[in-house]
Length: 147
Image (cartoon, rainbow, N blue to C red; front, side, top):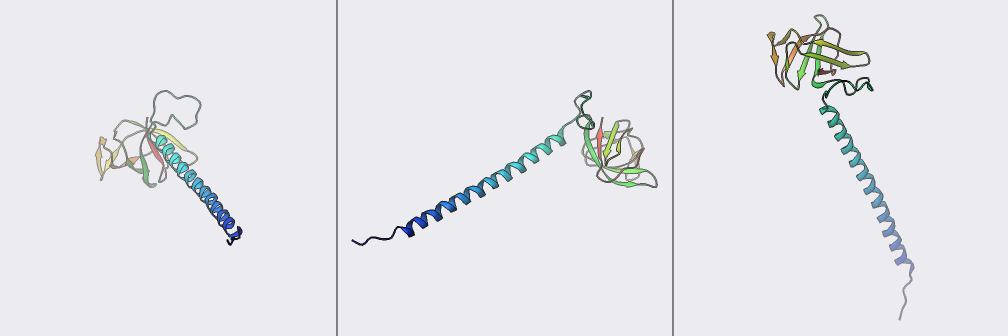
């Protein structure tokens, strides 16, 4: 009987073992990436949906005491000091709002002189773009909360 050399077989086994190791490494990286993305998305969603629950905890600067997010600033007309707010929740005349954005912008004011298509309104619903006179200069992207 002829005997075959053992080297080619052992080389094949080594190559298979090496391939298995590299596949495991890649799989671990993929799982970590997916888990990281999923965790980040879930955390962002929780932060977005968090609403004002009561008096300030006293341990935060701007964290839990902002109120309920009701919209974002989409435009600011500096000559007439009017901001355009895209609403994600209803807002009525007389509500107290808080605008937060940038490094130095964090102020509260009463919602007054709201307009939709140049017509004065007392109540704006979710999805409306409202023009409103604001007390301070704001920029696109600033968040608007209802307190």
